[in-house]
Image (cartoon, rainbow, N blue to C red; front, side, top):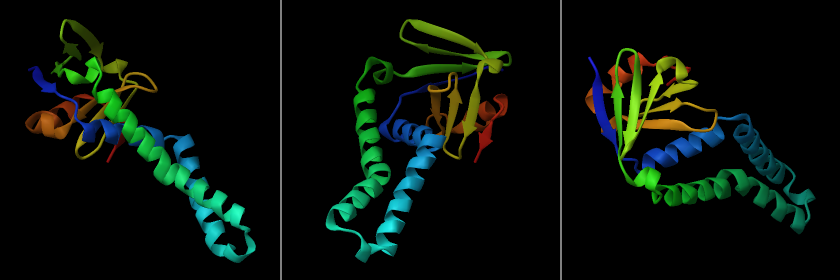
Amino acid sequence: MPVEFDVKMDAKSLSGFVLYHNYARPGGIIGVIISVAALVALILRYGAWTGMQKCLLVVLFLLFTVIQPLLLLKKTQTQLKTDAFSNPMHYEFKEEGFSISQKLSREEFAYSDIRKAVIHKNVMYLYMTSVSAFIIPRNQCEDIFDTISGKVKPVKKS
């Protein structure tokens, strides 16, 4: 029995995906480690650093913990204004696969086309490539979210 629903992308869902996607990868993790190491070095050896070195350590700390997230969130605000996100996407999940349509375009996929599925409590990310995913927030398909997540094989579930 097919299940159908529409998703109108909102800032919270898109921002959550962008932050997850950037910080769950090795580059994001390394960036956070560098930032934390800069803060620890600043605190442990505060008296040994010159003023310029302290400033550089503060900037390094802020780079991946404050500056990059703010830039990513600003980017999502810009993305939400594009045609791809201003119109709702219609999803239809069937036994043999799923389809996504928006305006006049429609794409069909087999479940085996999903490269990676990440299912969190309130959102599901269906990666079709290594850098792009379909975002399905629970609040836009509350009653069928668990049905859909049962059809895809999650790589990561939390």
